[in-house]
Length: 534
Image 1 (tube, rainbow, N blue to C red):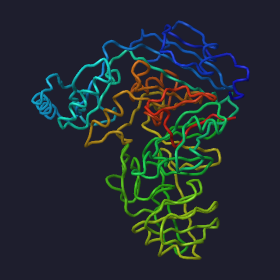
Image 2: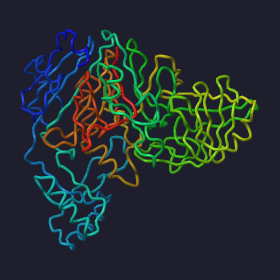
Image 3: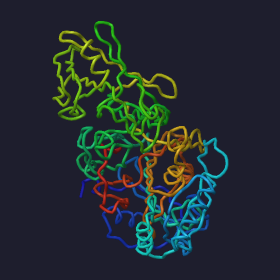
Image 4: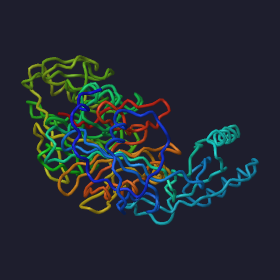
C-alpha cells in the first residue's frame, strides 16, 4: 500500500444522497474500505441528472491528499424493462429500413421491428430523424441475443451488433457508477500533469502502471490515441499533446483540448490548431505535416497539406497523405518509423548533421529528425543538404489567438466540448463526431450510452475529473454526450470536455483502480493519462 494512505484523512466534504442502494458485491479494495469508513449520508435533492429524480443514490467521499476529494456515486438500479437485442442495421431512411425489414421477414425472422432515432447532435443542421434502427429480439440473457446474431450472420447479414437497451440513450433507471476527483487549486500543493505511456510516444501502458511508476495520488486516462499499426504509430496521440512547454503531437485542427498551466492558474478548454513550418537556410519553406508519428496516416484527420479524404476532424477515421514531412524528437522513442523516403538529422544548433536515404534511423537525444515522403522527401534533398541549417517553428492557436507554451503549460486532446460558460454546448458535428455518409456513427458514439471520461473546470478554478462506468448491464450503463454534459454541470463545472472513453475509461486513487474495465480482456493499455502527483 502506498504511504499516501498512511496519512491522516482530512474531514470529508458534504455528501448529498437521495437514498441508499445496494450495489453488486465486488472485492473490497483499500480505497473502498476507506470510503466505507469515511462515508456520510444526507437526504436532499442534489442528485445526478441521470434517470428520474427519485432514483436511489449513494455518495461516499474521502480525501487522498489535502485539496483533493474523491467521491464515488452509485445511482439507480437495473430496469425490468431493459433487455438484450440485436441491431441488424442503422440506416438513414425509413424506406431503407422497410426494405431490410421485408428481407428479414422473407428469411424467417418475423419479430424484427423498426425504431426511429429522432435525436441529432446539437450542432447538426440536418432536419428530421438521424436515422432508423432495424432491431430483432428481446432477451434477458446476452447469450441468447448472441445466438440470434449468429443465426442472422449465417443468413448473410453483416454489421450486426448485440446491444443492451439500457444503453440506448432512452429512459432507464440505470444503474450508474460515477467516480469524481475534485482538485482544489488553492489547497492542493501537488501538480496535475499529463503522462505518456512508458515516458514515450511509441507504445502503450495501463493507467494503473503509469500511476504506480509515478507514485500518483490519483489519475485518469486522457486523450485519444492510435490503437493499431494500420492507423499509424500505436500510442501516437490522435490530437494535440504538450507537456512542460514541449509540443509532442500536433492538433486535430479545430477540435477542443484541455489546457493546464499550473495549479495556481485557472485551466481552460479551447478549440486549438497548430501550424508548423520548416525553413531552410537557403530561404525555402515547407509545411511540417506532423510530429512524432508515422508519415501518411493521420488518425482522426484534421490535418494539413492535402490529406484525403478530408482536412476536417473525423473521429475514429484515418486520413492519408502520400507526401508528408514529419518531425521526430527523442520523446518519440529510439528510432523513427521505418520505410521509403528521406531522413535528415538536425543537431541542437539546427545544422544538418546527417542525411539518410531511408527512414527508420536513430533519433538524437538533442536535436531532431525530419522524415519526408513523396514530395517532402524531394524538398529535403533540395533544401536540407549537409552544412545547411533548418529551423522548425510551431504556432498554436487557442480559440483563434496565439498561445505561447512555457514550462508549466500542458495540453491534452479530447472532444467534443460539453459545457461552455456554464451552458451545455456540444459541438459534435464541428469536431468530427458525425459522419455524413454514416449517421449511425454518431448514434453509436454520441447518442448511445458508453463509458466516459470527462474533465471540467468550476467557476472557482477547481478541476473536475469524472469517469462513468459503462457497457456493464447490472453495474453501470454509461452515459451519452448530453447526459455527460448534464452530469458535469450538476457537479459544478462551467466548462467541460469529453476525453477518451469506452474501454479506455479508467481512474486510479492511490494504488487502486476504482473503475470497472469494459473490455473483456481487462484494463486497456492507453497512450497517456492525467496524474495528480506530489
